Amino acid sequence: MGSQLPDGEPMPANGLLPEGRLPRAGVEFSAYLHVPFCTTRCGYCDFNTYTANELGGMGMDTWVEAMHREIDLAARVLADGPARPLATVFVGGGTPSLVPANDLVGLLTHLESAFGLEGDAEVTTEANPESVSPEWLQGLRAGGFNRVSLGMQSARPHVLHLLERRHTPGRALEVVGWARAAGFDDVSLDLIMGTPGESADDFRASLEAALSADPDHISAYSLIVEEGTRFAAKVKRGEIPMPSDDDHADKYLLADDVLTGAGFENYEVSNWARPREGQPHRSRHNLAYWRGQDWWGFGPGAHSHVDGVRWWNVKHPRPYAAALGDARSPGAGRELLTSEQRREERVLLELRIADGLPVEVLLPEERGRLDRWIASGHAVLRDGRVRLTLDGRLLADGIVLDLLAG
Ligand SMILES: C[S@@+](CC[C@H](N)C(=O)[O-])C[C@H]1O[C@@H](n2cnc3c(N)ncnc32)[C@H](O)[C@@H]1O
Ligand code: SF4
Image 1: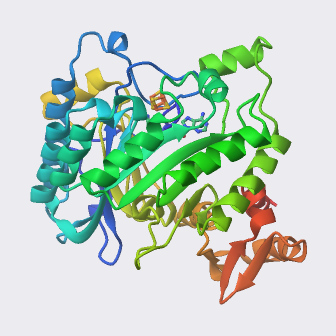
Image 2 (image 1 turned 45 degrees about the horizontal axis):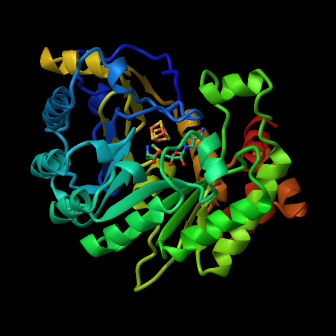
């Protein structure tokens, strides 16, 4: 979640969607819950999250109460539509592991009573290794959560230090063991690659350490230097070199080599999953975003999408809670996507996933440009779908730009 909210038209106080838009039949409906708290802010991160002294005395209870109110609001707004039980629920942040398990389970229970949950719903929480405990994981598992995603980032102390992460390298791996003991069959680890000063051997060691914990899913993100972060300021002052594109590319190829060698499949540019026991272990929730399905994002700064209507909440937890306390929508703005915008979003998102993009979504002139990427080995067209090759995944953003803009 970047630092800026888009422009758009104002959200009506009652939160009703325009033109009777409602979650569509035949499309998955999901919920995202945003936890806007962190103990300290990591130097590279510009997510919408706040430390205690940035909240002006607002406590976590106020956020929990406001989240319950937003669930009630969503139930009223969607009451006229067909019943759409939730296919996935994802608690992200920020640091969900700072919120007591009881409170997260209370929110899940409320969502279930408001919308229903599919029998095989995926219910994930993110967690920061330093603030998670065995009891917290047990509480969530008993309360219906079945997937946990841990921010490991690196196994190398000097890399964690540069990222200003406070946990020790082994902590994330220990937490995987706690999650297994609590009964989680679906565990994911996040890695960051391309931190300045990280050698290829350092990154290989992080991949191997992650694999040694036997997770089901690994995300590996190239470090992005976000404007306005401490990290960006240090780069500007020349204290840290800018991460290099060549280094990112080398690390990406290394990640794909090591992870596919260990039985993982890449299913989105930055995500690998290990199919086992008949389960693909892909993140169904993230796939719902990439496939343009319907979701309600609850919490400060959260974004939602229902049938071509996109809206976003006010960013700071205080005005967010104040709006809901006054029975007003916390929405800061919204936009109604045109059919051309929806088509372009499909190109942007579906080209990134291994299942690819149905070729008929492309306009004739885009088909012409696609032929060049196929000829150069960056994309393939099979069974009516365009898929990026490994070389193509390295250039995914550039290929999308070229196809759409020429
Ligand atoms: C909300 S955080 C995960 C949960 C928890 N807050 C944590 O950090 O452990 C989601 C992930 O985004 C990734 N991330 C955040 N900022 C990033 C950046 N500037 N560049 C690349 N990845 C980033 C990190 O891998 C992080 O684990
Ligand atoms: S703990 Fe996670 S969300 Fe919080 S500042 Fe660090 S990376 Fe960002």
